[in-house]
Length: 449
View 1 (tube, one colour):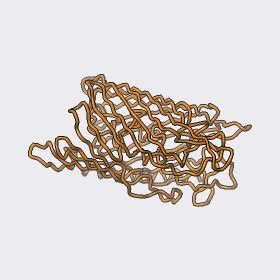
View 2 (cartoon, helix red, strand yellow):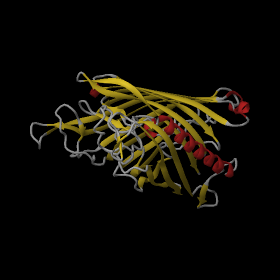
View 3 (cartoon, helix red, strand yellow):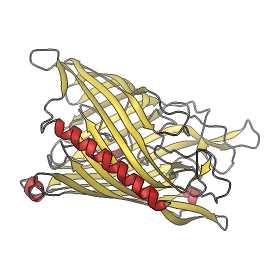
View 4 (cartoon, helix red, strand yellow):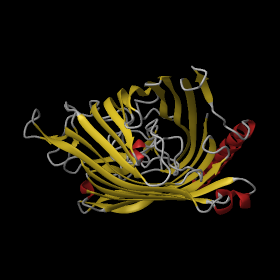
């Protein structure tokens, strides 16, 4: 049975890869300025349009106890629409910028997630220039975050195929796909780049807390949040026109930054009290520090290649024993199969990703010299995440990932082959225990223009 699944996924991956190559080759070698409408003769006022698709073909080893379409399942293969987005932004006057971003995420064949698919706004904000470069202020549904560089990441130019999700701890609970409604300020003071925000978070979509020792999101939370992120940019200066930070420049820039950020919200989580109406609330403090480097290894990356690296450390306090198992585009049913033992990971491809405790992430990528590859741009990468969560009795939770980016037209058209080994936790002698690892193989075809 396992061999049949392997043959299926190889066939689907090959078909997807051939299709993506055909699309890319039909698009020529140069992206140019993309789709842009100039509103003035000098081009200082304009409106630009961007759209992108990320398609996944996957082979996944399911968590113990998983059911898909109410049938027990050990392995699954599928095709998923990870992202389908449309973004438009414009410099309407010298002092006013507007941005609108909409799309869908994580569409699969399964109806396991009742909130998918739907078309919705990811971003919608207006921004005003107060002092050139030094201060801009804006308001709306926005992505000007705190915590870390990865929390502000663009989905168009990842080094690793996708985000670790640890970087978005409130995803689809206190926020709307990593966005909140609020006001923000941003700017640059010499080489210091800053962003600060005061937001009115979304109400978490959860039930009442049922445990006195395990915190969950508080569905009665009625508080504001504050967030901020500072980065000092030693070498080339990165643009802060938009909030989205770059994962890899593919040898086109020489960047070295260090950064630190935070997020704070009172009473975001809660534990059960002595009666059904009572509960104890807990303030949330999220902290991050990081260092990012992206540089050619010589004067010409086509000859010498390029290096990308990112180190990130997170400290999260979301209340006692708070933990979230996250599985991207999870196709499994809510209930485990009755005839299998059930892991602490939950259903499908989920694993402990977010919780009260500490996480350390390291990413590294090497862009091979294209002169030695007939002009092709290939990039090897890896990521290691080591987390220690209070809810797992401080048992180490490692996640190992690696892969290859094949750039057909830079980030505008690329194929990514990705592997992940995620930890499987079981309850052994009334204690969370790392039992084994489960594997995932993913081929992503991405195009944006």
